[in-house]
Length: 101
Image 1: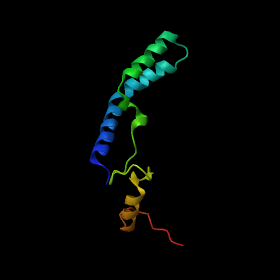
Image 2: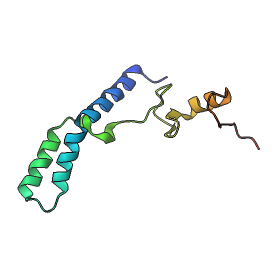
Image 3: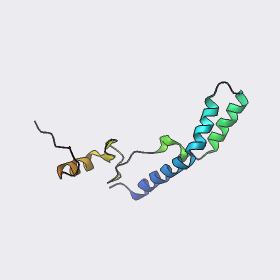
Image 4: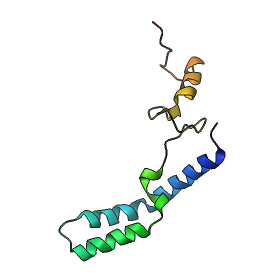
């Protein structure tokens, strides 16, 4: 089980990303638009820099829904390899069978 503080920090980041997503997208669009004046583009970049760092989407860490483990994460199932194996062995994930050869 991961530290609860790490899990909560990641959840706070998710909320910030959701809160600032539209503002961040608008500023990025202005900053990337080459038809605008350089001063206007620079001002958009400065406003973007003033937003909270944790509101950037890249700061979110994929974590297992069950254990909070940050490594060996399967996006399709939203869980780590360990939790996936445990649930798969008990038959809680439809269509998942343990391989043997």
